[in-house]
Image (tube, rainbow, N blue to C red):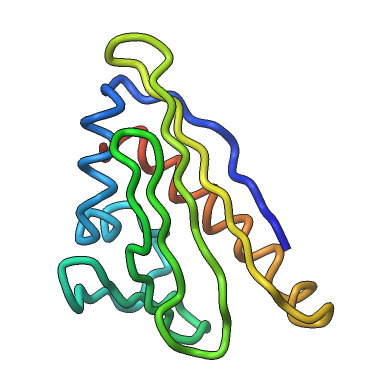
Length: 131
């Protein structure tokens, strides 16, 4: 299953955006309002839970300076990645898009597609004010 967020344009350089997203504790400020738990476990790993959903642990798996950050599931039954694509369009203007990729059976994919789409859309929307 592959899902994409809308692109957002930030009034920041690619380097500033990359640095913000590289620090996992900053993801707390991007979370939806219905977050029930957020905890930094290590400098590259955090746990979060949304009301009514199980806890999810994300770990930074890859970082390509100023262009891409990959967060992946760390443990649990679901294997997926959340990829932030960062593109500087002009000095101090950067586009960011989130891609969600995971392997799920058809039933699970049907259940989580809506909530995950809304979740990644909220993350990028909140970047406009938080980054």
